Length: 76
Image 1 (cartoon, rainbow, N blue to C red):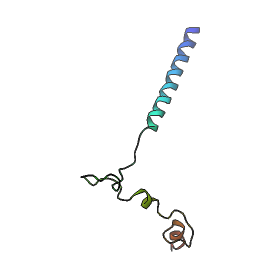
Image 2 (tube, rainbow, N blue to C red):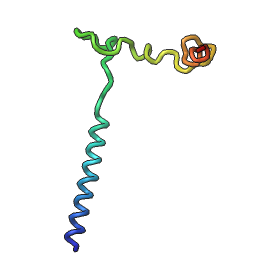
Image 3 (tube, helix red, strand yellow):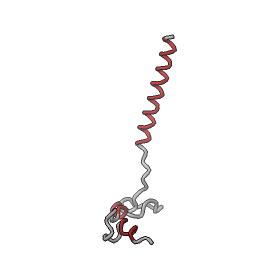
Image 4 (cartoon, helix red, strand yellow):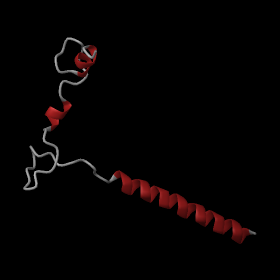
């Protein structure tokens, strides 16, 4: 009986270890495209805007031109 319990604990530990390993490997993945303004390349691949251009005006308010709230407020 104690051998069966020991094997079950070993399986659980392996499963938990596998889940932790998979989670740590997944967190290391980098899916961000190359920023062409920082790293131009021959194939011209990547994001055409710089980080500050991507961020833009932010949420802003209805009086800040180019902000998301300004655009949404004027949406018909």
